[in-house]
Image 1 (tube, one colour):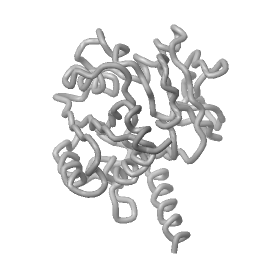
Image 2 (tube, helix red, strand yellow; image 1 turned 90 degrees about the horizontal axis):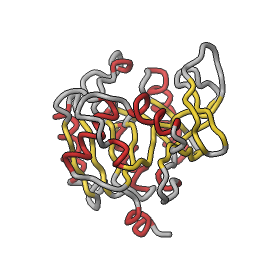
Image 3 (cartoon, helix red, strand yellow; image 1 turned 120 degrees about the vertical axis):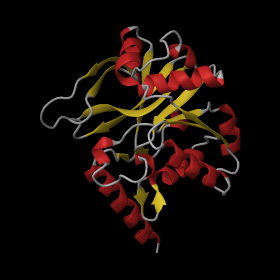
Image 4 (cartoon, helix red, strand yellow; image 1 turned 180 degrees about the horizontal axis):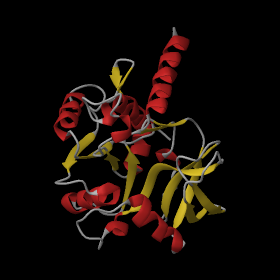
Length: 245
């Protein structure tokens, strides 16, 4: 299947890019975390290139912290080859609404319906959106990592998510929430216009009702939310470039 045919079937991608990024501010403070510099380019540029390679053509960026800087970046990118063939919208939150509130706000403002793709703007994942089935279920992407102590783990029966286990002390391996989703817009209706979380207020409820499935993903997973993993991504990109010389 060509990317053009695939893109017609993919819902819009809502990119959660409005957080404060407090854990990374010791290294990246002048720009929003998703624009952290990596080998001369913003981290977000690598993400967009990867998402487009998966077939995404419609982007909705959900902004709050240093939103004007991010909007300037998007306006510049939209005039280049990077986003020239894509639909791009920016939605500013009037206040921090949390991941769930930000998505609900965009759904209301833009009158979205059906399915939407959702992702965090601080996470690199090789693949994912092109692997979600196109049916009537809600999906979360999961990755298996050796040290899940920072994230907590998914309790699974087959591909069905039954619960979310809290973070545990000490190193523990398991399947974790990779921070990408394909969810029904109706999931966010009726929750009001205040602050709430996808991770704590939406996904556990879906799991409890047996309405959440996990797509197990392979490939590299790097969350740049903490300095050591931001540096790991920078080193990884630098090494990739050296290998191409």
